[in-house]
Amino acid sequence: MSFLTDVSSEAVTAILPLYVTAALGLSVVAYGVVDGLVQGAGALVRVAGGWAADRTDRPKWVAAVGYGLSALTRVGLLFAAGLPAIASLVVTDRVGKGIRTAPRDALIAASANPRNLGRSFGVHRALDTAGAALGPLLAFIVLWAIPDGYTTVFVISLGAAVLGVGALVLLVPDLRPRQAAWLKTHRTRETRGLPKCKGCTCDAPGGLELAGRPFSWSFLRGGATVRLLVVAGLLGLLTVGDGFVYLALQDRDGFATQWFPLLYVGTNAVYMLLAVPVGRFADRVGRGRVLVWGHLLLAAAYACAAAPFAGATTTVVALVLLGAFYAATDGVLSALTSALVPAAVRGTAIGTAQTVTAVARMVASAGFGVLWYATGRTDALWIATAALVIALPVCAFLLRKSPA
Image 1 (cartoon, one colour):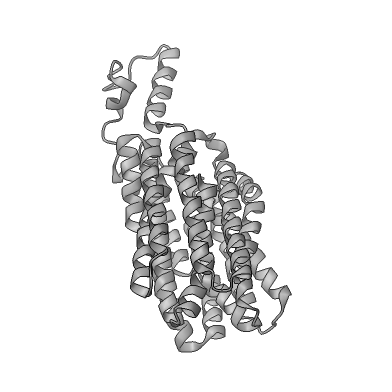
Image 2: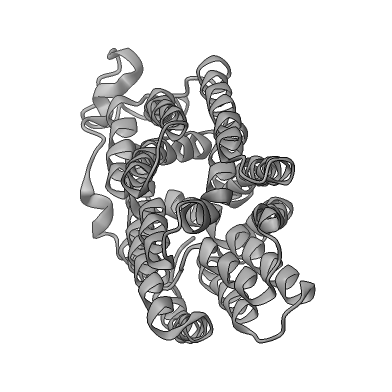
């Protein structure tokens, strides 16, 4: 279902910078606001989505609500005109994404071998990113055939979103992570001839009473988890939206607008190819190390976009670096968070980490739009590059003792 949903969402995302700045005639500051909403809107509901998944022990159905809400926004895009309507639909879509992300990742973690969390999330991200590559490719084909075919892209996006919701509801198993964790613990004690665990109610349906209230902020008392959240927030504040990098490349190279969606295709294709091997590498050498130093690739991508060397070579290198950056950070953050907390609060913890990252990136995108307007494209990108390079050793120091 993630494949189809990403076809839907990335087809829209790929044309959003052009739609806002060219079709609607708005400034780069306005796009900064919209991109900030894309990055951060619905961030707080990520915690709520994770909490609901933990509390009900039904992550599949919590995720289904989020996928369904995002699908509904595709209908609205067919009739929206002007920045307020577009911004409202973007917010609603991101709320749906916020609701579904943590429950979906909790399902992945519950299904995976704990020693191979990085690889498991890498497999998911590879499939997810295949859809993220196909969506912009479809948008490119449409805009190539119909230069102003934004509505056609929105129709294709709606169809893919409906199919994605159907795949989740009909095909994905209804795993119950908390019940599975209880059964594993109880059966292990039983086979070893140990007495019942304190407070155990073995006759309770599914043993859910043993787990009590799943939602708890106690995982924030762990030093490693708190340090991870600090690092995620700091790095998020220095991560501007991809759309700015792509707009900078187009502004420097001057290629035709119909080629713009292919920039997303290039980034996502690299991400798809590297997600699994980088996830396995993170399992071996340490997920915290890969998460932090993967941002060095992002700094290099900013430098490529800021460099005065116009041409296909620097553009392709920037796309490769962006794709490698996502392979080293996106699924790795969820895998690292999953390994640091108990199963009963896994969804909440993943949602919290994603919320911190999303809010920080929302601030970063809005601020970078203003910085671009005030200093120009090149200076803004060089400032972002320098700030990120300076922050990386600090973040590496904070995660130096991470157990995962």
